[in-house]
Image 1 (cartoon, rainbow, N blue to C red):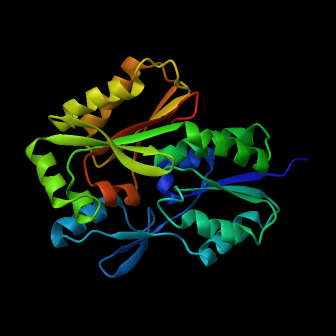
Image 2 (cartoon, rainbow, N blue to C red; image 1 turned 90 degrees about the vertical axis):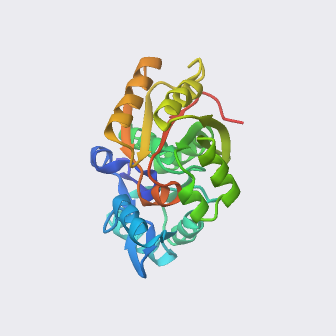
Length: 286
């Protein structure tokens, strides 16, 4: 009889309650330091709490990785019955989460830690794929190896309406933020090789730029896996989210278009009115 495989991730995969329940994913939250208190991402603090605090005080939170002891307790809890476990983390270039998980996993027999080389539902795509592999009876090692390869094919990007949070967080200069606002520029943030960089810059109203962005990202469709795509947002109006889902459905025959809201990590870095589409390509991205 094959060993049961538990699929787990940190809270940055942004799957949302419905998908977490559907696939029975176990989540270990990142920590959010705000107003002199430490919270657990998605447990006792949510993005709207961050926005409300910022509007009142001008203070942004700092996020931090679970420590080694947190991981050891989590791994012990979920493997005490003899189960194997595959754990997915935010890119190792963005956080110490992966390093802490790897150290903690050394004390256990059948725990495999996967660096998603991504963030948000870019990692969520790997988690869902892993759940499907587990349902097919694949071992934890097979799943981890397959998902490590798959990580290089995830296409993740976001368009940001305003650079206020990036500027406040020290991720862009005052001049860049001022120029972008003056010219109504909406930068596309892309993830490649585990790191974020600025891609194409769109100009105009946020809702209009999203149509151009979606068309650019989907292109000819010839090299895209059409199983699923995430439309992930940070506090966008429902009408904008619905319109983007409709645009994706109009342009590409994905079997599943999944709308999710980003958790505290993405929300605290990018701010309200950030939206991206995330999917898997047939070949590794360069």
